[in-house]
Image (cartoon, rainbow, N blue to C red; front, side):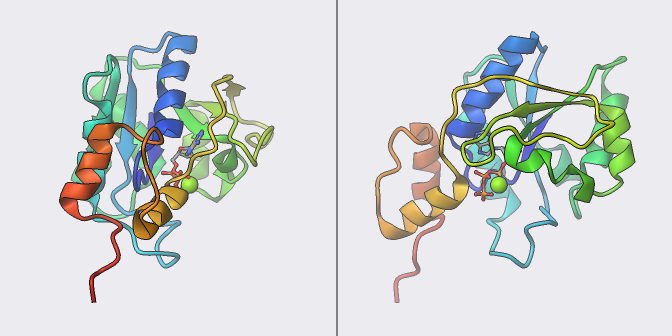
Length: 191
Ligand code: ATP
Ligand code: MG
């Protein structure tokens, strides 16, 4: 699983997903859209989950073995990876579960809800992210690093680009740009 707020999804997420899938020969990568990304609540306004899911579905469309997952949205409430790993363990027959995280998130794993369950329930896959190279999970975690092209792209920058009217091209798939436009996301309200 590759969880995120995906507000919006971008090439950094997608390039990491396809390359980790290839490197580890995974059956599939689930882009798990957080329902309530509780660690971000209060910091900024989060786009409604159905809009973020629609963008991730558009992004994953036509890419073999990369799937949008609504499991956390259907569960509702705050999104805890411990719950999602448990649900995936019930859903598949004897699955081997990997949790993909960018290196900026790797060092913060100890702040996650029911962290022992996360640590014991998966192998963490770290992909380096510009600005956070080399960060890794704490001692005692089962983890590995996979080299992927390092793309200095963030949802934070993309939201600012929409608001400022700067180009989005090549930073996210055209279908996702279309989704942002048609749903009027991130735009400054006309006064
Ligand atoms: P924001 O700027 O709003 O925090 P983000 O670009 O960091 O957005 P998230 O939805 O927060 O995207 O990230 C979901 C996961 O994807 C995290 O594990 C994060 O580390 C990883 N990730 C995000 N962008 C990249 C990138 N450019 N390269 C590698 N991993 C990334
Ligand atoms: Mg982030």
